[in-house]
Amino acid sequence: MSKEEAIEVEGVIIKALSNAKFSVEIQNGHIVTAYPAGKMRKFFIKILPGDKVTVALSPYDLTKGRIKFRHKK
Image (cartoon, rainbow, N blue to C red):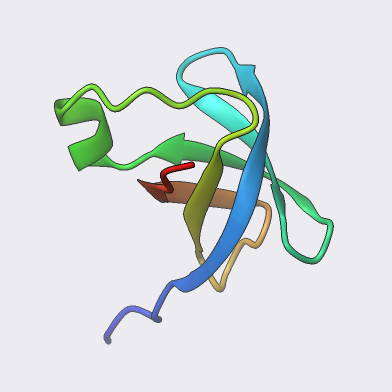
């Protein structure tokens, strides 16, 4: 059984939560909880409120996601 493909959307970081998690408002106005991907943690890429990010959402749970990319301003 193969995994479903992740849904990629863009959003803006609203606030930083504890334990390296973030509240992200995606394009359609929904708020999701997201954590940075492994490479972002490995290379110490900083994420601050107000940053535009690309979030990968699981098709099974659309309230949680993984931050894949932080866009430059």
